[in-house]
Image 1 (tube, rainbow, N blue to C red):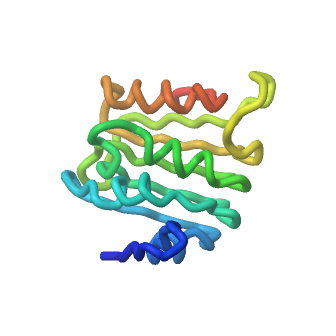
Image 2 (cartoon, rainbow, N blue to C red; image 1 turned 90 degrees about the vertical axis):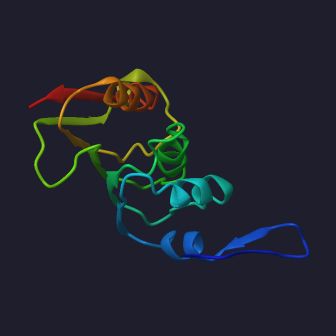
Length: 145
């Protein structure tokens, strides 16, 4: 899918990551069991310096942890909107939550421009609670709709 080339100076030039790192709007969709992107992201996480909107349909970070999501959030300094469709098969979902960055909670490692976080899922289970817990560490607060 993409190629990381080792250079003589020890740096890694990640072709896919380098290409998508300049996107303003990015939608990443994956299917159950496809962890290649998440693995590669952890090996080479660029700064998404122009990224304002990120939409993830995610099974891609399900195994083993949420580090890929944290990596993208920490390296997207101007991110304004994050949409997560979590562990849903198909377009329908039962639960929708909306949140936003809360500057009153103190400094955070993510964009202070993040004014909309949307999560859609079928059920609030252990996996969703894990995502909510991660997002709360970045001062993102939610309400249910």
